[in-house]
Length: 285
Ligand code: AMP
Ligand code: MN
Ligand code: MN
Ligand code: MN
Image (cartoon, rainbow, N blue to C red; front, side, top):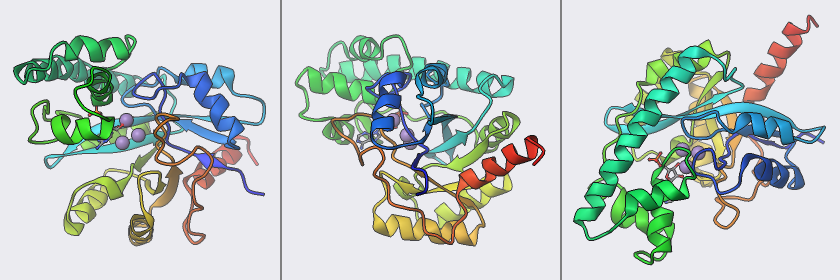
């Protein structure tokens, strides 16, 4: 039987609700044998994930990096990175600085809309780690302003809504080069989620590939079957490797259960074959 892979997950190091060891434990029990921890803009959880991984489970050091591209926020996964790489860590530190400023600004904007203490509340929920919009959403639900996290996004935290602050994230080409420089594989995350025309998405993928991007997340917890077919076609056309990840954040509201991802279409080349080749090369076999 082939191994179960999940190459996109979050822990409390960013906006997940399980700490890295609890995530590893849940994934292991769900049958996942190769798990990438890909927190937003930080690699802080990786060491704990590695330490707690049972024998027989491989932890892939990963990160999901926020990018601003042509007025859109897009996410690039770095898989199998050496998290000690300097350019990567400097880049991530700068993104977290922007997050700190943005969180305060979101707090000010929400305050103008009669929502009190949102910055402090979101910060408290983040436990001293980075603050994401998800923490604001959880705070607003906890305070009873809105019934669920999804509705907070629709009502307050997306473009044109009162608490929204436009992203000033990193440049696509820079992010790809930080990941390559860290020995990792740049993978464009959940391309089916971006609200872009087909032409624009192709232009994004083309620029990503030109910058050195290597993979496309074809299977994602946030893709429906049409998205999967569409992204599989794009992976073929642009000759990109294919990745698969749940984008797991929270056991109470999963896109998809850990370990329950559909298989990649068999004609696509999975990203992991590439790092298996690299390992074999390194071992001189
Ligand atoms: P940030 O990187 O801080 O802007 O937050 C982005 C995160 O918010 C994503 O990674 C998701 O976890 C979450 N998110 C974005 N849009 C939605 C939505 N419509 N409903 C629920 N969560 C969302
Ligand atoms: Mn998230
Ligand atoms: Mn994402
Ligand atoms: Mn994610």
